[in-house]
Length: 206
Image 1: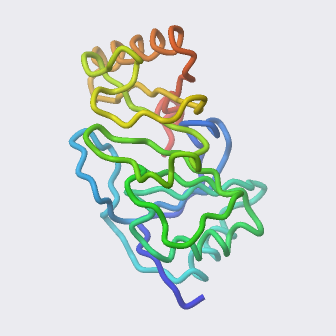
Image 2: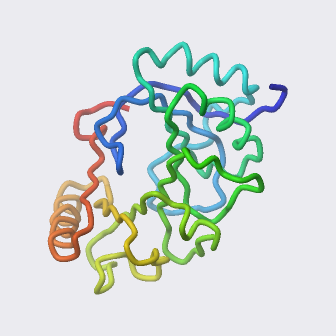
Image 3: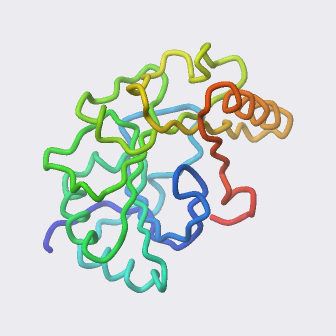
């Protein structure tokens, strides 16, 4: 357990997005990202500290209570090599979801029970090894920037039969947000995609 990771925060909340929306979870936000998306609403740098796997697991254990879901997010979690060891350590006690932009694939094989939610970004390539390993694909959409299939222009398309969530972009403007939400509803009704709303923002929690 001498390996370590750069961690921004560990906290307990409600998962607001994707396939586990509504479930209580302990979140581990890892530091750093290989992309610089102008619309990103996540601080993945401030307050970062290097913690050993034992320190991370102890903090998760202290916060988890009756919750059995741990969400590993970022930034981009797969930038840090020790993430595979973190998964191996936590997997015996918890269900694990990891959120990734899909550009990096881990050097060590992924444990099959780790649930992967991939959110591709416009203009970036998804690593080919993720193609059939991702459990759910999540796309953030906004008015004027979606293609005929309802997904963002210039963004990777997953294989047929994939589970796809679409989420309206939060632009910090009520009028724009309402338009994006209406777009997301129309897209879901016409394509069969699943609507993803940021529940944690709606109810006012972290």
